[in-house]
Image (cartoon, rainbow, N blue to C red; front, side, top):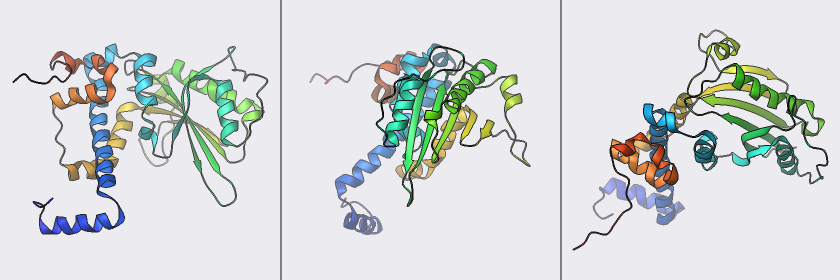
Length: 274
């Protein structure tokens, strides 16, 4: 710290009046780790070879489920690969209702539907809390969002809307079907923003329910933009080898999916012999 320019020393001293050095270092590390995670995730999702081998449920779902911050700091993972009945239980619990769920939630076209991921956030207000559920139907990058995927997402939304036990004045339900690309049917269904030629991705909105088609690449770019100033401040310069190191350190068992591993060997750190 003695080598810091005088101005930086003064800035650090001012920061230390409000936070400990340990807290400052921890915050900087979180930002750096997340930036490296985004780099590694992009390598896994969009590298031509690795996206073909990426497994949807056992790998991609696990990566996203363990990193709720991708959808916003205020979101927490509520449901992970569970039935609509479990979604209802979590919903009622977040509302402070511990009533026993005797009857399962009926899916509109099958015995029971399995939701990939549901993230929830509660916003405290003066009169009542506002609850938002983000239900994500997550597809591997090699799968295009089209009629089958949209219909699947819509059926989950319809099942929620039809069941009276889901109804709550201050609850919003948002459904996403997300992958790396979409087909002609999805393009046809997506509404366009008024006065703009760019698809918003919205295919339905009524009352407290909306359904969207999302592209993973665009989502990652939006998240990365939020870190742009932090990245410049930390002077991070990602490299191909660093991508691979990120896979190893932050995704561990998923590292073998990344094709960069074929170019840079993944091996545990060993102490050099002297």
